[in-house]
Image: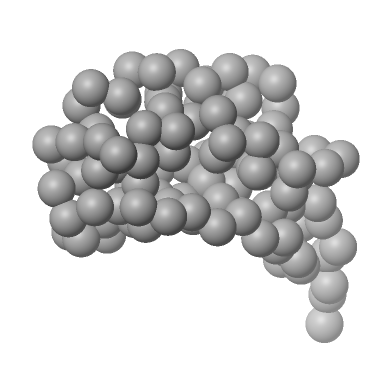
Length: 103
């Protein structure tokens, strides 16, 4: 099972993230250590968005909990994340697919 967590960032993301980045990355690496977060990072070359892939028994719940506690979100007034969305992801291809489908 997988879920996608996507952030929309402010236009000044590269500047505004600096004061929150250490705490954001610490929380992300803790989620990796718990086996909840597979990968994450910035998407694009400006404007940027953020994308994280969660896994496990309840990946959607893990993604929502991560966003609720993430400094990039809890400090929205700092202009890092202007919005976020967590959605289930039905994976059908690849070694880690939740429901592999073969032709």
